[in-house]
Image 1: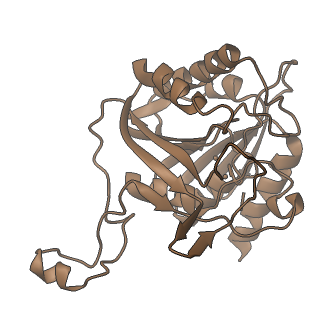
Image 2 (image 1 turned 135 degrees about the horizontal axis):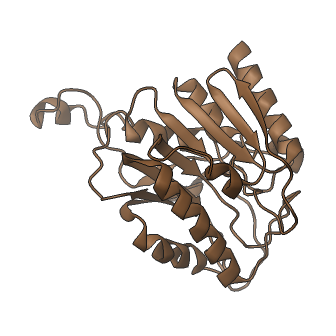
Length: 285
């Protein structure tokens, strides 16, 4: 999940050494499992999850605390396929799996290689472009992270692949929608409310930060608004939400604010501690 991306959404959820024994924490309607996600997923009942929103490691060399983010590509894809097989098993028949992932300028194919691997398990119902920064005319919006390169353009977007089991899940497009710019469209086109579909390009900027400490010392976080939009789009009240790469708890924070039940999995104890504190602070506010 990417606030935190995985945003806290962690991509720090497995290791080559023997994983520690899982520990569980409950904060309100949110539950956290500290341990290896593959082991934890095998304990989740089949067909019990409405929405998965997650941002796994990108395998592009990010500096996670407990995960080596530079595996051989085939090893990485095989591991992600194992995770996806468990997600297919536990997802309800009308469930949604939102996978946030990005490549790098040097590895642009990796997200698509993963999406193709998942083709035997899921249907790609929607492909959403998450725009983090954009220039319109001579103005710019969003958090811009400079890149020193004579070859590549600044990367201002990431992918959100919306997978379902059969490709026929009905969504609440208006709940996740936006008001009409031209209000005459409401009556002229017979719409019942001042909302329209947001489309498949979502501009959700990061909050500007000046150092890793402001991102909970996590290298890959996403804004709370990203999992919120995914949960709203799926459109089930009191949904059961899962993030197997929880990081610093952003997906669970979104679930909590929307009155949903959340389950997050994370290997790193410091990220788990941050997630617990964020959820407790949010409940108290």
